[in-house]
Amino acid sequence: MALFALCTWQVAAHGPLRSFDERLAKALTASSGLGPTFVPSPAAEFFADLGNMVVALPVLAAVLGWVAWRERRTGAARWWLPPLAAAVAMAAVPALVAPAKALVDRPGPPGPLADGSGFYPSGHAATAAVAYGAAVLLLCPYLRHLPTRRALVGAVALLNLAVGIGLVRRGYHWPLDVFGSWCLSGCLLWAVWGLLRRNRSR
Image (cartoon, rainbow, N blue to C red; front, side):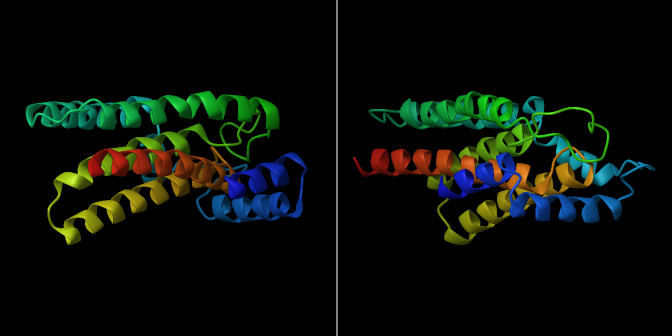
């Protein structure tokens, strides 16, 4: 949460971190053809779209349904708690991101949405991080082998990194928009993980 507060302060106050952020974004988007001669990048667009709610939410919903079914089938006393915790974390994303966007009111980077405002933090990055991250937290207890768990966690981490890079390279967000969302999402996922761990120990 401290990192999120620091990023928010720097963006809102036009601090040196924001200046570096904007220089970095311009360098990254220039290498992908963004700017006055904007050229879409199919790979960047694909990964950016994975942060869309219509993509991420069905994935999480499928995992929620499977875990609820599995827990209830095994007779767990509080079978509803793990899926409920993940669902609440997902619902918290727009509840936290929307006010932050309105408060900071950051203009967009050069690209297809340059005329808009309210880009910090990134809703797509937060949606992807919480949806896919919560799905992994729910699935990990059912994976017996530690290497399999690590592979799944690593795959989702790389997926979220790709989403963030896609959002920046397509000109939808500044890098700090994405990083701030990751910090916020990390707090939500940490809360879910702690609740799941306490539930499992009972």
